[in-house]
Length: 476
Image (cartoon, helix red, strand yellow):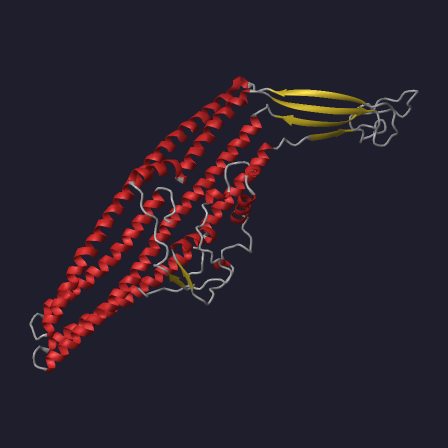
């Protein structure tokens, strides 16, 4: 099929045809110290903050002039890199990860300064100056001090809170992978629908050629007084109708290309050539294999499992609220005032405070209840998500099997039979036989079945891609 569609792209677009890495592989849940240099490089490249330099091109440049040719894998790669929705999810993930070191960091210390070395009875004598004495006729201050207070949580509270924040961040990453697969399924549907439209255009072009042949035969027979002129007119009308259908399909093709461009983060007016003869989709595993894979690897189930883990840790953290926190205060005192000479020696003081949960543990008790309710909700959501994913895999597999049987039946039986009927009718009519209406009927049947076959093949590829995505895999 030589039909194609075109869209303009930037010169900076990568032409690498290698399989795009999964988002989850870019940043693993392991500490950064355990990541290889290559993993860190990929992570920093994919999850770099959005700047003017890496903002999707459709927002910083007008539509370029040259067409670009892409297959489905390249479109998925462009989707991952340039789709604004995925970019927003990546930034949300990075934002959540940035909260982890903030939570794990120690609380800020408090520094205090008190001075009272003002003249006696001065309005600025903060803390009150001592009364004059024969030794110190101007009075001295014994209340000047510098203190440093450091709040400390009970051991394990901060580390557990940081773990919860990190788990929630990883859950956001899994959600972004799930969204990537959903958008990829939408992209695959648009891709195969557009290819099917191109195939239908090709079928209509062939139909116009067949009707031109029928029209010429009818004209020749009319010239020989072997057929009525109305037969020639009917063939002409049928040909015009096929040409009119081409206009509608060309419009559908244009709309499909614009939708694909928008989805992969390009300007809708860019010119794009869809390659339908590139890499084929991966073979379809058995239903049991797909179910097992979905249960262990689907990003949506990863996200719900991480949320459940965070909820369980939240219960442990809520129970730690019964434990007291601390505050350590170190102070230094001196009789030196800010406007006087040093009148005595320094001395120091150390203080340890306990922040005790009082008021009959009301806040702590209800905090634990809230955390336990959240855990129960997360457990129910996890079970529901697993049921929904398995059900979706079964439904997608049934749709794939049905599309496969329909395509096989059309391709192996109905289209060859209709083609044979058309050829027999054309030969009979060309040999001065009757049956012009039968010939037009056969031609119409052949055209309709060829269009149905194009749509069935597109539906089969869509069903296959949807099945793989439903199980949590890229369709390659």
